[in-house]
Figure 1 (cartoon, rainbow, N blue to C red):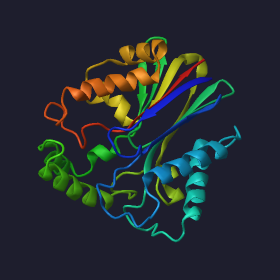
Figure 2: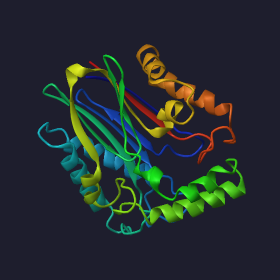
Figure 3: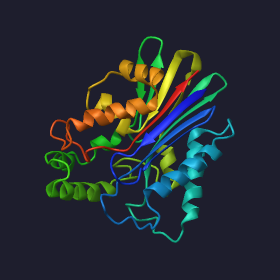
Figure 4: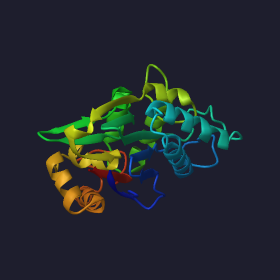
Length: 268
């Protein structure tokens, strides 16, 4: 498997995404925004995704390990790195997870939350994603989206939304992300696809996939053409050019003007 990767921050702050590729693995993590709220952890989201990502790669080095078990092991290992932090805080650093692995004629996938994996088949595209988060607190989400980004009203509405969202995070009545407990791995969406059915695959954070899913300014065919001919950096640059036409979120209401974006493009 040939993997081309890139990741770029969405603004001036640290990049809270993480991406890696090996001859058998592609991993994308998208750290969840804290909206300036307390997390109970002194390390921060970039620290969390870097340590979770590296331990995922190690945990899945053995092809017989299931992706679910590998994620659970990695979550447990990262939790042991900072026991002095309040890991029971509902805002403890957390991330979405998207993993693609090639083994013995199969492509194994795992997604936890809304970072998608997209398969380019011989006839069409298959998008694997976990959108349970979109079902949570729609009224508060709509309140955030009525304000332009970078306004005081937008910032305050986002804080209210994230505060309420945290109470449903990693609960059976809400949605699941990678955080402090290995239990979250049991709620990931996992499966396998014969490699012969797939021409190429893209593992993305939602900061990159929104070119299709949120902005509707490109099709998956166009995305894969860009990835194949120009590479992941060009795709992310295209996202930024689109966002620059709507810097305050009037056309496409969103939580921030530009989100961190990551891509792992896989070919065989």
